[in-house]
Image (cartoon, each protein chain N blue to C red):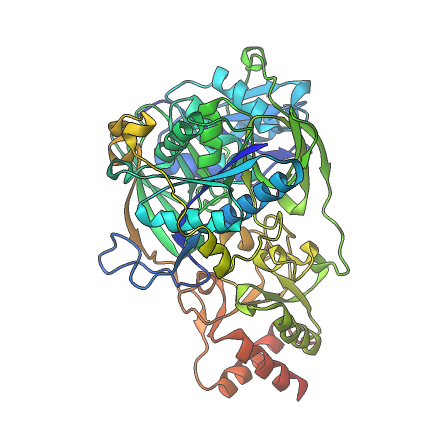
Length: 321
Length: 263
């Protein structure tokens, strides 16, 4: 196979992201005996390096005051200078990975695969990758020619964390080789999400609505059910894009992370970005008129029905109890 | 401000149930309704608003077959001034890099201050904008949900990041931005708008016009190739409640009570 495998470590406040150990498992799925190294890039990163060093053969760090905020435009320049051309780089497919990786693959003249959910083996220089299209409605096999290296974005949560900590590597300081990182995009500030009228992250029961609600006027159907159940209404992204509910009501990686006991997914197809905001293993009831909606794959209980008909029936029955 | 917006014609997932065809070579394309990729539509709306605000022009470009002309025309009906179609049998089977290299050639035939793409399309890859920026050596920002003009040298952009937070950046022009849904409210395109641009000529550029070697794009140039479509075996999935609506409601209420879903 081609060269070494690297995993890009995302972290926050000195703590590695869950993906840090998921990428160990992902790399082993590509090649069981691969030597896998971690990349830790930022300012004051020793704590992060120490956290992951037992899981990787080597930890390459770039430590620079200029990287106090992870500006992908700057980090891309540094990585081009330190990475071997024919390596395989795994990056979490999150808002940073999407920013960094496609352009990096061009600069390294490597192949690029986005949002990989699994690997099905390496034959010669051909890596077979599994990914999804159409919001998870269909799955595909993709062949990737890794002869000149590859940058692969891996979906967070799609590999189990490898807790073996069996590598026991060393930290290698690459800061001196990072070169000039000045970029045409400069970070200014982070604007925190607006706090809404309700805090869906603290609710035990959520009635969550998606595209299947069809019209702003129909939201009262969900309101009525939530009131009858003693629950609160949350939603998926299209409802916020349409400005029918506030952003603070949105469940998903770009919205709120919720940990309810019971989650009613009403007319929600179940994209990975939405499910990424649903934690704590709740009891999930999916109601959708499309029997092939991906949400039925992860739900505990499914009902094939049009929510506009079904939710009022459910509300009436609960109110009569 | 001269703005180029890259758009793609895709099956409309709000109008269709996407399924794998019988031999797994493609999705089932019979009776599919197509439209402009939702993210791209937000990008065109944003471009038109910027033009209305500071002047300039909006050009829409698409890589695709002849039928992609309809989405270019639709976006012109929205208010884009010019349309370009990049179409050639040699482009078929292009991977993300192939599409980006075609768009690069189109960008270099004009002079643009701002190049917009949708943050992602039907294949969920979110790759073309970043690749295009790297090929052009221009600054890039993905998942943009806010654009503010500063002056003719730079703009301020907000990126959507985890948890509903927004990362604000200053970025030099020219630049490439990928646009996230929700950045604006795309205007409705009526039948009158479509009629107005019905006879506007949309130039079609092939490999020769773009100066792109045919074997560097399409299937021949692709390092990443889709082999098939399939439906994975994903354990048991949900227990489907069956019966009359009344029976289903009754079962569900029992389950909700047991799981603490009813107060």
